[in-house]
Image (cartoon, rainbow, N blue to C red; front, side):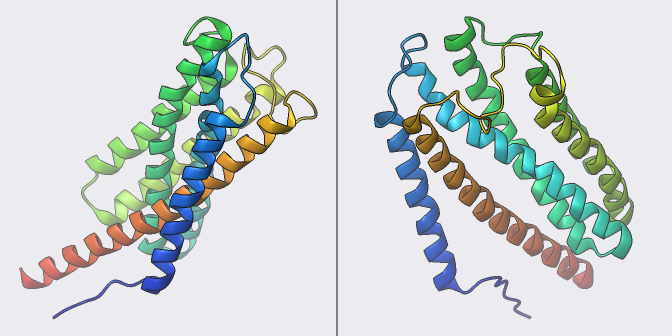
Length: 232
């Protein structure tokens, strides 16, 4: 028996892929050639236009996972557990990008790759540990139903970590070297803001397409498991 997995029309898929690729290329090229160089930091500051959008997207994953997990706890439909798992997967992927890009920017701006006294850095590291714990416990539980329930509760921990990371420079007095929110007034020239927002849009598109593809892959794996169980 043949089963086809189709979430969107192929024309839509190809069109969306092209939009994502074009937006990423435009954002990267713009960040390299358009904004003026910050003399104190040199060319290394251009990693900022990658670091900030990736960090934003990394914080969305746990929040989405928390919402999907709540829906799962009310409905007990494994579809929502799959969406929650996908969101946390992507959050961890982008979080790794932040951990690599952050020290590059930090070294040029602060003179050290990692400031142990910075509240946002420490809270983001806790978020990464929370996500790793989520995946470890999910892997260790063999039962799908129990795995989904445990994952739903662990998603709460990840979401709290994401919220604390977001609020670290807003709620804590003297949070460290990390700059204030980029959404605040002042602080950036127009060319920097334009380049940053291009990056934000591009990486949001990337997150969305990866979410769709990853969810589709998980769905295929579920169908394969069901077919294997039926054959056995």
